[in-house]
Image 1 (tube, rainbow, N blue to C red):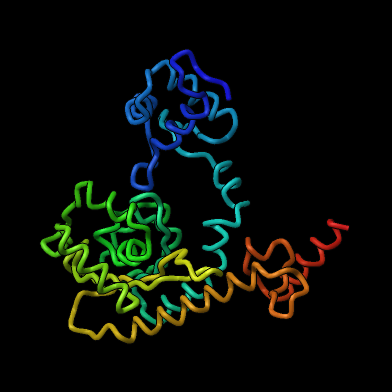
Image 2: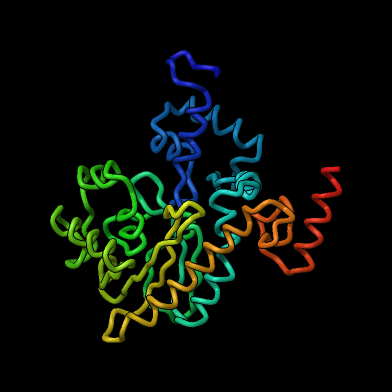
Amino acid sequence: MARASDGESVLHKHLRVLGAFEAAVPFLSLSEIAERAGLALSTAHRVVAELEREGLLERLPDRTYRLGVRLWELACRTPGALGLRELARPHLEAVQARVRQHAQLAVLSDTEVLFLDRLSARDAVINATLIGGRMPLHATSSGLVLLAHSGQSVVDSVLAGPMRRFTPHTIQTEQQLQAALRRVRADGWAVCDGHIHEESRGIAVPVYGAHRDVIAAIGVVVPNDDAPTLGHIELLIRAARDISAAMRAASLPTGHPAATAGGRYRPLVTSSIRSMEYFEATSTTSAS
């Protein structure tokens, strides 16, 4: 891998520039990119120009930059997070149609929860999450579910860092966090009343992969009121089971009795039955 004169790889500099953008900070000037990436302005200028030429960054008329559509195109080719999002979408839609508030899908990313998808009603309660955005593990129901099923090293990392306080109800101490994780493991779900915003309640359950490992969390954000939570929990558990089944079916070999149609496209897309049959025929033809 090519390295710059300062010993840092060229690739790492490019990744630092791309990483300067966040869901909550989608537009940056060149000087802001340099500052957030920790690069000299001249270096940032060169890297930004290269990324712009490749379509990974786009320059706007006001001379700010945003992530380019080429990144989205590349990301859509992975059966990882976006494949999970695609397979989970019908079940997420069913949940949101029932609760008529917010429904969301999240995965663990380092010591944060990364939200892959979110569906919201126009008149829903406040929800601070963004698609592609991150939140602290200790402060969200999805984060607690994912943390409860993570290794001890992840828990230790969360405990070693500052635990941001959003409201008086946000978990703040090791004792509170450990108690919450024990409760999640015992119950099989997490409920956070007013942890991010006092008007909002987060509820989440785990989504299991083919090897019974937790690969995601599906949750809702609803009003933090006296309404019972059991109905929402049961709804989420059913949706999580359906997502797990869809993931397993998408991973089965073509021709297996339980495999869904779609051939090699199954881990990437959920569509109509006829569309999936078309994809399977296309993949079979191209492979022959």
